[in-house]
Length: 592
Image 1 (cartoon, one colour):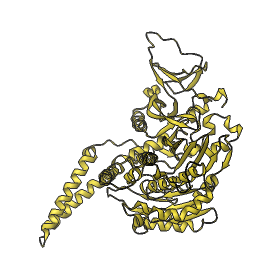
Image 2 (image 1 turned 180 degrees about the vertical axis):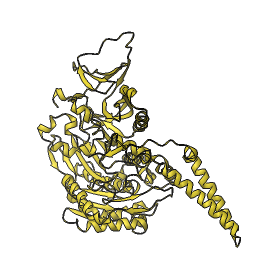
Image 3 (image 1 turned 90 degrees about the vertical axis):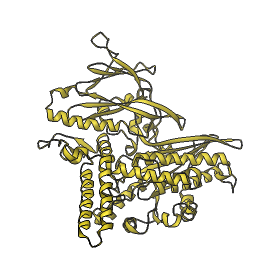
Image 4 (image 1 turned 120 degrees about the vertical axis):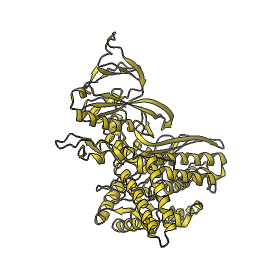
């Protein structure tokens, strides 16, 4: 990368009453970035302004500029306030963001109408939710949005561009927030960030030292939370689409294997309604084939051949979705696109995950044919990956992670045999330390992806982590399932709004018919989770008691209906207050 494009790896933030100044501290003589706290305007200046008794700055180190967001009246600068080194990717240090800070440039808000001030306050609260975003990673010298194979295939001209110009937009988490900085040509301050997971370990196998890295890249096109983002949009972008790359490095050789996960690629949803498992609804079923075709066209363009492995149940609500998926794939399957259904729960149950060997036998030919990417010690391409496995279940979390870890294990064994580390019959399980660390690698990977989508660690993680189901694992799964229920119904709506805001899926706009935000009062004011659940449970208990005592006494039957109605009414009331944007649908518009 040319020096003029090199990212600043050290920054100092000066917070003055009327401006923010970001000063490079990496030894370069580059100018400072000046940001007005009045309107968010930006410019480069030669040095930090002099301080005096009226302009006493707060000074602290920061680790990157993530971007800027403009709301109704003010602008908000987002910076990395805490980070840690977590390893390296192709020789470049990788950092995890531990904390973001949102710095308001909203002094102009003082002259805004009261109603606009109230709305700005509500929107800025969403930014405080966004500050808590997990699983964010960056590098000052490496494009993390591209796999090793795609990085190798970049031309010299592309490699000379700033990192943000090289980045794959799908996996650039702060793509929207960088726009204002891009407009101001601030390449050295533009820090590309991905959301996903990054874990690695090093182990010895005989005389060989093997480095294994697992990196996940979450797509931003249909990003969101578990119940609020399902299926695909009309353009074929699917919820919880994650690219997972497994990299092994040994004796100068580098080998990479990529697989992906993503929601079933047609329009479907689950509307939260306080039931444990809301009904699956297929939206515009007549569009399913067209949407799936667009999705797979995009996958083939980016990855080559595609094998879609569908892990959902064959019966019930999941069965209807699987049937629609299979029907849509009839128009797509061919030499470069295959569909395979594997009823995970029927075949493996909740404990016999070793039966995934049945699935591997069905996909082994595809994996061997499409292979993996391999570079020799001279960085010459010896082999390339020609296709991918696309795995899905309902959430693309738990069943998917168990399955992907099995596929990753099999491919890693093939790679190590090719590199001469393993003999023909040797396996990862033959090396206890390697086996244990590899399981932990995938378990942590699955937990990270699950937390970002569902708010809890992955279910079935004990099998991935220990190779078997445990009593503690089953109990933990039960607790996490309850936690997911709570988050889906009472927290994820607001989190979804925050995601949509920071990623530009909704642009804040002032409309002439903009409705005021309703004040919460009366019963609404106490419609929070603990109170609501208490009322619902008490009402259901009384309803049950009344039904048991009813017999031929219609009074008890009447009272049971009354208590049941109360529980349903409270549930409906809480659901109606689930999301901020639901109360003011004209405050935002879809981004074009």
